[in-house]
Image (cartoon, rainbow, N blue to C red; front, side, top):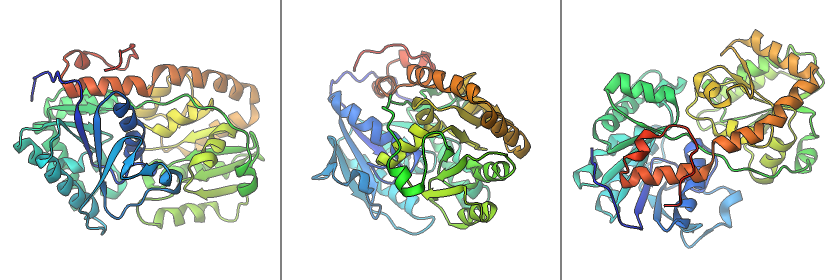
Length: 399
């Protein structure tokens, strides 16, 4: 691992491992869409290698001009757009281009793409890895080639990365216990938003202020939305349940959810949402629920609390460590416990208002993007001090 401190003022940075930037279809995409422009504002040159075939969402179309997004260079890399090949081919294509490019920092995101990390390392590039979660434990990768491929990427990262950034204490402990590898804990951040009145969600879905329970996530098994629907079906309430998001995999799980929902008119599937519609959903929810079995560092949790939502979340460490006593927790995968918590908040408006009043100040004070970007650039440069900092949001001067 390199210990040389990079003194040059302007760094040339390339990002690898995402699908497309700008986007909010996945956690990594949202992180880079937020962080990269902030790095550009600090005077650094940032390039994102996007998969060919993945298109920018309508929300961002007008923000991309001449191959740049807010000063971030966007370049497409060779991608075979077939299931199981897109991530692999785009990562290797990007790694080869990064190896021959004039970059100071090659930043890999997620474990799978790290199978190609050795390529820029051969060319003496400084390679940083952010582990957004232990992807090989996800339901869709639990068996077969996919899980082994991702685990191999994890081993490559542990052995060859100059530095590894993790988002949670649990993953930090895992790397230390499994590989004897020190990592740097830098959780995701959030920006303080402005709450907006219900308008589009009223016209589209018939929703009004405080008349619905909201869950927003990628619709995959580990997100636990099926537990939420099962629990909600047994709650005595006139509040609606809004499931916002779509799947990045097959539609099998979505079909399972709709079957669980049956003909209940109060369960609404919105599909993928962004922009004003997303802002309205966060701003006007009565309660926000995150029933995940597995998480890295849930951005939707930070966003929901930043809007001042009362949150009910599963008691996994990646959620519990973030919310502390500022949210309501239920036992992971326990439908009965979740039902009881839902009934409790539906019956106790004062309790909900208490959690709402504390959420935004707490989460925005503790997790902010400016601190995340500053500390990430410290890691790029090789500052020793960044290894000694954990979650505390000490004020760091702009780098």
